[in-house]
Picture 1 (cartoon, helix red, strand yellow):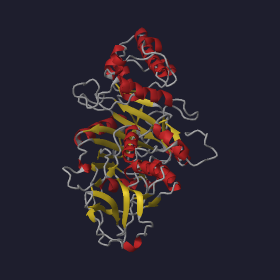
Picture 2: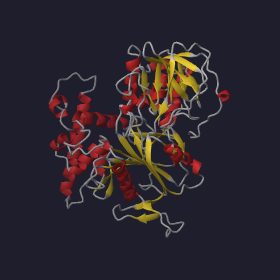
Picture 3: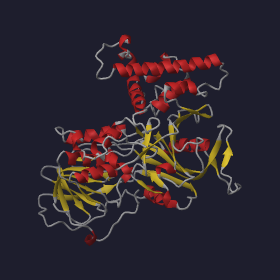
Picture 4: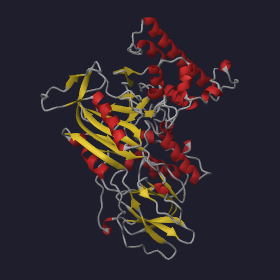
Length: 560
């Protein structure tokens, strides 16, 4: 867990770094920067990794709850602390260009009172966020030895989808389809209709599993129905059209699209949908979901969550990089970039200590604005208006009875007719060490183009899930009955709703790393990070398997 108070001081407070030249210098210890540091160190590069904060993780960190409002409201759109003192090395060959940072959070609103002791609550800046048991982020942790520094817990409560005013379980197996009595519309369906609906869903999952098996590297059969493969024509269709061809009803389509394939945007609105999911992409995520279930003997369901929060992940990769020889210095702001005016390229950084550090490659966190070198546009400002609205809540009891950790999905139009994006909510308990026993943390998010709409969807989801504690509530009365949800609704004790800008990774003489995106997992961020490494070192392997330190329990399960 990180403490959000960064250290600063006079020049004498900063250490002198030796040597003064590295292959790679990274500024910021977010997850992409930390993975890049690990990959560069594994490739034999000399690495200096600095961070202006006193903790690891940057925008991917987990911080104490009392620090959240000040961290989100901090004005980063100012020049970095300047230093006029230059190192003793010759400076005639280069000049220093001041480095500025920008604010990536806005529209921060908090309400309620944080229960004491407040520091026992830890907040993920990337929430809601989970890892699939079978995704590449987990494989990277295993390959780098990072899994020995991070413990995981299952999302044992599974997933729920909000449909027609009720929370319904999402089936995670064929058996669950027929065990679940809620997978039918609230329309007057008889038992035969209900059985038909479940049979169609069962057949769809069987079709997907047959396609996955036929598409595996070891399968050499031809394409077509005989091999179990879905045709190329169907794979190129919008996924929702393919689901309609399978005669799946609207609710079941919503389960597949938004609670398993994790589509963010309204797939029924093909003309205006910002990201229309193809069958190929949808099946790929379903395959990941299916292979995640049962991968680890002690993990229930498809998802796992890191103990103490997602801020543990950057630290795990930083530890790996340090073992490989990377040098780490926290509380060390970068004040300027060093420019070779003749070659028109960046060749290093000036630190807050006044020391100049030369390097072959610079990698910056997403809040840094890269100064233009007579280019038509500023690379760091080329990422325009993509945003994600987020919410953090403390509640009095579980959303799902007898469950500690659970994921809730609100498909488009489920909260209001104008809702164009899905809203996800992740409940976490004390068994992942983010809050005291008897309390629960809930994270919500939805992609948005404007702050008002995004926050409106978040607040509407909070209204559905929670009741608001009023002055009339007695001290011991923490639950109230919902008209829409049959079970009791937890009381909302404290909340913070805000908007975060989404930036993409960019290559060049300076690499700029991405901000946390709107997704539930790290797949897109990891893919962007790998591409940044490949663009820089095309002949090097990205975190090879033989790079990990050897541990006695390398065959142990990852999750508990």
